[in-house]
Amino acid sequence: MSGDQPRLAGSDVGVFVPFGALEPSRAATEATMVELVSRLDRDAALLVCGHVNALVTGSGISDVRERQQRAFRAVGTPDDCDLINRWHLGTRPKGASAVIFFQGQLLELTRWLALHGSPATGDPACFGQTEVRKIFLRAALLASELWAKRTFSDRLSGGQTGAEAIERALGAFRKSIEESGVAAHPGIAIARGRLLFERFLPERLPTYRSDFATATGMSIGDYLTCVTMLMPKVSDQPSDGTALFRETYAARTEFAAKFALFLRQTSQTPDELKTSLEKGFEKNGFKAVREKPILATPAGWYVILDAAYFVDHFTLSPLFKVISSGKQVEKVFGAFGDAFEDYVIEILERRYPATFGVRRLFTRTKSREENPEFEIDALLNEGADLVIMEMKAAFVPERSILTDNPASFLRELRKKYAVEPGEQDREVGVAQLARQIRAILLDRWDGAEIDHGQLRRIYPVLVVHDERLASPGVGAFLNERFRERLRDAARAKVRVEDLTIMTIHDLEIKESSDGFSLTALLAAYVAGSRGGMVALHNFLARHPTYSTMVRPNETLMANSLAEVEELKNRLFPKTEGDEAAS
Image 1 (cartoon, one colour):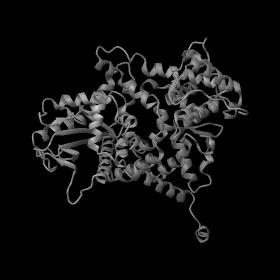
Image 2 (tube, helix red, strand yellow):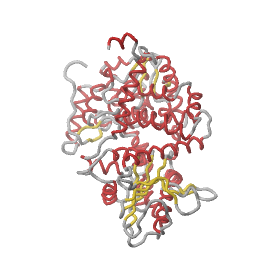
Image 3 (cartoon, helix red, strand yellow):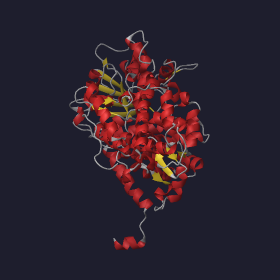
Image 4 (spheres, one colour):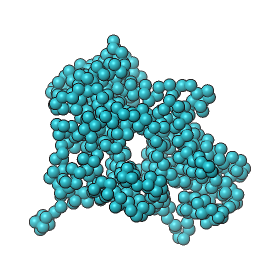
């Protein structure tokens, strides 16, 4: 657009803009959505939708308001800006900004465009037309309302008690958190992904490298290099100013052929996207976008459909590539769980090394019972305080999250993190923590140098790979399961605190954050988490002291910088002439 750019009113507090702000006389229905998107060039609108998603959801340091301004300038018009600001001034809380775009809404819009958009030239230049922008913006606002109806439905009502109401809403809470954030830090994702899949998993599954090569035709290193090459396209300020790219994106590098193979495996056409979203959406959600997050249009344009999903894809797809090739699912998942445990323990060992021969950290320490599986993954002994950690890398099926029966999600949480049902119920996660703590209280544990005369508090911590386990209410639900399994084991002089769910990102942050101890953090969190209703991540972000003290993981950041340098050398290798000149 030429001339003055439209500016949205407000500050950092956001209020979502409804469809009625632009179309007060039209019904916010699915029929209206079909009418709107059928007037858009499907392929061009999907490309622009991916671009806006990067601006709003891509990794970066821009605040919400700045992201919204950029996204609106990409598709908005001055007239619509005036309408939104007029609505905003009449309805907003004091100082709040207009929030037009968010991840779940843009995924919802992607779905409607794929299903009902009109195939045409696929040229994104059509968004230079005011009418096209107006239709797209209205479809986006309507998509946010349809997303909310699909996600929440009646799940926020109907519980007989407060606890029942929360449990009924847990799946909706998880999905809303999953689809309303921003992409993880690419440096952290790059470093963690390479450590897990190039080092830890092959140590636990010796055939992994060859299995991956058989499944993809690429080495795991080459595959992760291709993903890393696209990280600039999932930034809140994409390289070259746009999230769109061509198949020739890597043509000037030594990696062109491998990148083309990577694109074929991770991209889908608009027609393929339509087919995948038509079949089984209620069961699978946006699984098709997770598995193939890149859109490839017949006109030769490419875009990453969802920035956050793409970064998640980087940290998980190397695992599922092997599983999808027909390898034994339980064997591969089991090896990944062990690899995750190894990764977590290495972080803890860096943070808590033995000092002058005195150990505080004990890993894989066993009970005096003869069962070899009865062990504590990690125990931090601070004298009067013990921190007991159990590590879990489990996956909750998409089909269980948003269903007509909210109990299906609760069953999966119990199965993955408490008790796995079967002929003999298998204790996992919080049930293991309860069993371990009962044994400690009964003095049945060796190898951790526990002084029972000094012991006063025990902090149970579940360290998880699934960062969405930090969604509201999950901590409270699993804490109840923990308390059920602990029963009457606690002694009067030893206080067993409520459960803390610590995501791997939380632990990575804690490793490089000085000025406070883990036990001090856990004590403050337990006191302020309302029984697990507040996630540890949110507690850290909002706490007046801890929020100023947390730091990104220095080890991972250093590794990611080294990876970027290695990437440059792989893509643009120096010639003998270059070396002589330098």
